[in-house]
Each structure stands twice: as structure tokens, then as C-alpha cells.
Image (cartoon, rainbow, N blue to C red; front, side):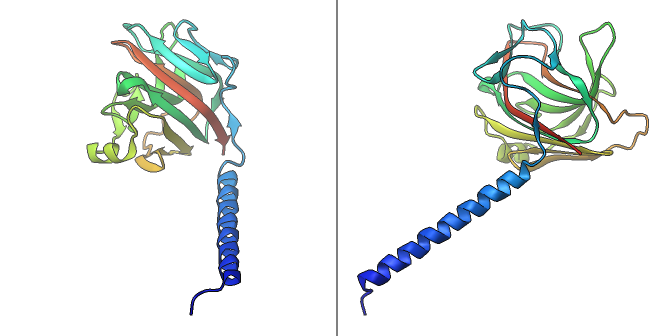
Length: 216
């Protein structure tokens, strides 16, 4: 028997109601996932950060690192230190070229431009890897090329997450775990600054937005 118009309208109302309920539930889950996060970058200027304003600027709410090609690694660093936290941000590496990264639990080396500590890597072949910058100078955890290909949106914005709790560090790219590492050296500091990197070598342009952190 064909469906009467009233039944059809009722079915459509039920469908729309179910869709609205699902959307509300999803929004609630997203909001819950962001509870407790605070902006790490105000989107207006470099307040709370220190570094070379020649290489680091704010453009339309985005933190931009751009070099003409330099002979050393340059870093823009937070004035505040952090220990256990979840740091989330969006990252765009222009043309997927050059090399960048986000330092954490790190420190400035006295009398040098270097920053020493853990680095969440950003570059064509090292996306999502965990590197020990200017200290042990080793890759602590590195995803396979196949995993990088699945996780990374080249020439586009990528969601990056750094989760550091005690000696356990997990990195995620677009929701995919790319590094899972537990520190075994008791002499490695588990607190320090956060910094963004413009690597030495050819010109580079890297962009960060929606940087937010939740201390644990």
C-alpha cells in the first residue's frame, strides 16, 4: 500500500529530529574534548613569546615563520614553561617544503640560537616524528612512510597534537598516532618551554593557527 502524505511527513520529521539530535551530540562531544584548553597564541601579536620578529609575524590571526634561507635553526619560544599537557594546533608547511617543528619541554642554549629538547617534527619525510633536538640528536620515534602518507594532508592545514604526561609522549596527526614514546633516561628534563622552528637551509614558510594547550 502506498505511504500516505501524513505518514511521509511524519517520517521526514523523525529523520530531521534524529539528525538534529546526532549533530547536538557531536557538538557536545567536540566541546567536551576541548574543555580546559587555553590559547597558547593570542592571534594578534607575539605577546607571551620571545624570538626574532624578522622571521616571525602575525598575519590575519596566523603565526607565520618565514625565512629567505638561513644558516642556523631559528626559534620563537614561549616565555612560560610547561610540564604535563596536551597541545593542539593546526599547521601548514607551504608547498610541503623545508623543515620545521614544535619544541616542548625544551630550553634555550645560553649564548646560542639553539633550543634543546623534544621536537614534534614537521617536514616532508619526518612528519609526525619525535626528535631530540640539539641534545641526543636522535630520532626517538618515527612513523613509516606509509603511515605518513595516510596521516598527512600535504599542501593543506593539518591538525597536530602533542600529549606529554610524565615520561609518556604521544604525537598525533589528523587524529592518527604517529609517535608513541616513553622516556627511559631519568636525566632528561620533563618540563620546559614550547617553541616553533624555522630550520636552517633554503627559504621556508610555515604557518600555525588555533594553538591551544591544556595543562594536566
